[in-house]
Amino acid sequence: MWPRYVREIEGIAAGAGVEFETVFLWNCRGDVPDAADRMRSPGAAGGTTVAIPSRGRCPAVIAHNADDEPEIHGHCRIVEVLPDDAPGFVAFYSPGLVPGHGFAVNRAGLVQTANEVCAEIRATGVPRCLVSRAVLDCERLDDAVTCIRGTVRTSGFHHTLGQAGDRRLLSVEAPASGFSVVEVNGPCAHANHLVHERFVDTPQVIDPSSRSRQTRAAALIADGAVGGNDPLSLLADVGASLPIRRREKDVGDLAFTLATSVFRISEAGVDYDVFDDLLRPPVCRGEVVRSPAPVGPPTVSFRARGSRGQSAPAARR
Image (cartoon, rainbow, N blue to C red; front, side, top):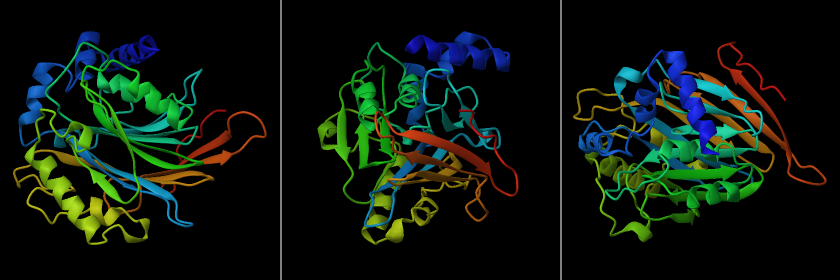
């Protein structure tokens, strides 16, 4: 399982003309001590996820701000990956990192967003970027949970998971020291620290921006900010001194919102939008259409399409 993802890192290194060891260590951000220490600064990378369960005929929603250093803005991509022996997926790609660390949907209709957390306990194990990449090869929601739970992790992410045809949305916190999965029963948000009851006493670094975004998101949700299953008003919010949407470079928060995604998950499939500027049309749109088969797992047709008249290449079947 894991050698194939190491091979992907080798491919990234070869394509970039960079030593493999350098790119591998870049994929261990937050896993090795030096990389973890940088997370203590107010400029820490991170992100904010909003999860809204389905209500009546409204689909479930998973939406995400992907945040990192502002220098990366304009150099990220939405990539379509088609492995020979896995479903294939569309994902946010940041230079040098295997896909899966931000947001993605695979051809089995499985949606994942991954958020940085910085628990102080680490172990000898699999880098968290590879764990989140492995989730994208899973065909069922429960398989994704088993993949995360069953892996000895060096550190960990918070994962928000959902799948077409499955009404559950799952919040998974998976540091090296333990594992917690909670079904989302109402609108909620997650920034960049552990919030599950299971980890209330776990030592962790809580960045000022993460604390601010978590508090602000909870207040907005309590005030009905995600009414009508629309998460964008929350993810666009700049009402706090350290805002949820991190586009200002002079507020003491050195990170930057690189992209915003919205996944709408229904019995029939998943459709998604990816935004750079929330005041403009999406830069990428697509859908996964679920078609239940009489026997065996559902078959899925997959189509990605660009906005502004520019079509993304269709997935090969």
